[in-house]
Amino acid sequence: MTHEELFPGTCRSLTHRLATAQAEGRAPSVVAAVVRDGEVVWNGARTSAAGRTADENVQYRIGSITKMFTAVLVLRLRDEGVLDLADPLEKHLPDTGVGESTIAELLSHTAGLAAESPGVWWERSAGSLRPELHDVLGEQPRKHPAGRRYHYSNPGYTLLGSLVEALRGEPWEDVLRREVLEPLGLRRTSAHPQAPHADGWAVHPWADVLLPEPSQNLGLMAPAGQLWSTTADLARFAVFLMQGDERVLSADSVREMRTPAAPAGAGDWQRTYGLGAELIVRDGRVLAGHSGSLPGFLAALLMSEQDGLAAVALANCTSGVSIAGLAADLVRIVAEAEPRIPEPWQPLPDVDRSVLELTGPWYWGTGVYALRLARDGWVEVGPLSGAGRGSRFRPNGDGSWTGLDGYYAGERLEAVRRADGSVSHLDLASFVFTREPYEAGAPVPGGVDPEGWRGLA
Image 1 (cartoon, one colour):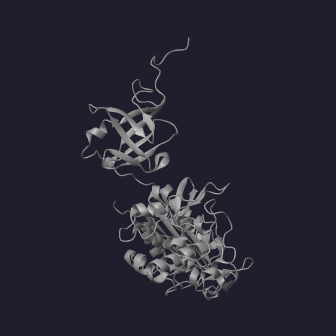
Image 2: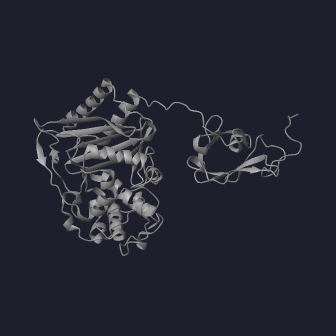
Image 3: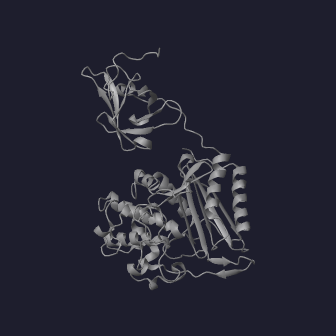
């Protein structure tokens, strides 16, 4: 797709939103970027310090956005066959005391582990105070039964970082640099600050004065929140998270990161978690990504796959700016001002006639469904009108398809043919779909009354 600049009015709206966030949030500086269809289309910065530049190349601490990087390393190990997400942690990292937790549960914050490390406030204290995993986990690391609920856990991502180190035989930071940062060209993302970088500040809640925040090395907790980065690097990372990169993770694997893996909490049906990525519904669109905070810094990276948009926002204050709200609004502003223009319709270059004959209406009982032929041999099955069960299906190469999403995700669709080659019915996850409602002679479970349809005298 040809890269197009944003309209001046859209840029002004983005700048206004950024300026409002910095002024009302009383932040020493806020920087942001917007990505559309794989390209950065806008950068913005507001700072309170005269003569001091804040731009897309200045590092800010990104806090828990680090978790997405750690999740990428774990999924690489899965894709290589080194581990399975269903494996208990004990299989690869013994003697933690919580080894029955699965890797998938740790990735999705459903292992029931505590939200924070015991002892002093870990974000403002040296990692040397927690030299062993036992120091990170404490005496009672589990707060809920495993697999039952979403409960955000920083110690859980400490365990995942230690898992990466155990299986790679190298420090987490070195593995991350070699396997993710260097291939993606994220040269301004690092575990420790590199000039130029912003200083972290606390802003007094009742007066316009500042207090410097300490910048600690988090030690074992680093995989949960250590990284520093820039809007330019995080914009590239957002493109990767939407499109994949075979040098790091495939498109299917990054899509898996953005797929819900944790139950939404009661009363919060608009928010859940995937495998290392937060998922929220805002302004009618699903946003995937992560927010982050450490004393002196706020960060957010959010993506809308349906709009082909992503936004990054970074600030150097402990509180005051609704950073995730800012990133979400930057996405919304572009999506509403400049809706995505669809690609022009094109006829298929060729068609498999055995698939073409399957298109059109089918009946499951008396419900009418439609099978549509998509590009690349994919098919879609869903209600002809109204709400109901539907999915996209990918061909398996043997005349059958596997569901990709919706109710039939992972289920098999097959066209069952008679001896003469004509289509008898569709078999979908044991359901029989026929060309007529309760078609006579079709293998409808329970049979079809031989007298057929009738009125009621």
